[in-house]
Length: 423
Image 1 (cartoon, rainbow, N blue to C red):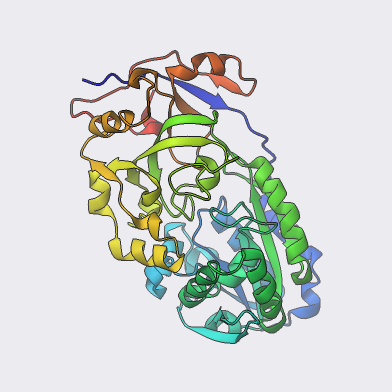
Image 2: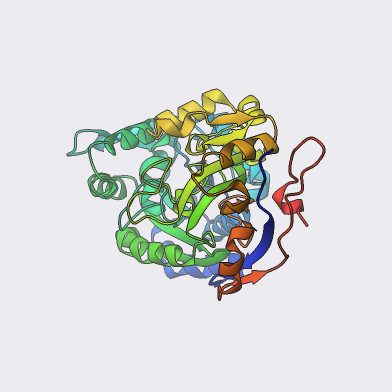
């Protein structure tokens, strides 16, 4: 029988700027924009809502809606999530409802449709799609989190600009832009598309959100349309500085309790696992370097969308039974990330899965494996570490050791408890 490494638990400390009054900050920031000069009583305002699990999401949207009500406007929320939610209007409503965002809770209608209009043709040769409800509104306010993208690299990655293009482009726009990535850089696509959308689609402004490593709201900033590109670059640098990371850079096996779309667009954040450019290894200069990844389950909020599972080498068999194959494939095809929907080797128990994985890490004996066990790629404050890291952890200035090394806690069926339940 293969021996397994002992594990010990550590707590990481990260920079942690945090907003205490989120709703108040939304109002303060929106007041910085001359909205009263542009928004007339009775005019409609489309407020975007995406598919990511943003901290204080409902509270932020409620405050935005209240602000426009105070101006006498008629706000409504429109899903801006490309092809997510199975690429249907009902599915996208369900995604928002899973975050508690409904017409009753947010305080205004939610208008969900996959219908788009073609705004124009770009000089690069492809059309610009835009959500029909948003296009027909008198104004559009883009609300999104700024963070490093899981596949694109550049001065602008995931944020206001991406929501303008891919989120509000719905399934058609997402498909076109992800296809264009094969021929052009994301920066080139933004340059070709964003100015046209800003000019033709009555974009009132943006509300940019940056979170800290503890998945808390660190910063909210209202941005004028003409400043989207400049401010996104600055806020992206902050987001990258504040993001959570694995505690060690060399990893033989990363055990992940759950993956899901609300955790990352690719199920697990490639910036965390070091697979932004290649699904199964770190490229030259990329950190961390993770040899093997094993996944235990899908999150509830992902609604069966298992995109990103293809970046793991091993998984539990029940994932294949629970996954929504159609939604997963649609997402992978739309994003032109086909390998993200491919299937790893699957095993009925954690013990069988880990035994197989540890046979593939090289010459290092399994009991000495550099194992890291995490809940997901968002929750990285506490991490279970293989005993191989013990000396390094003792000398690390930003780690607190919480337990001594102890055996993996198998149950009678050969499975492990949920990470969050592990004592």
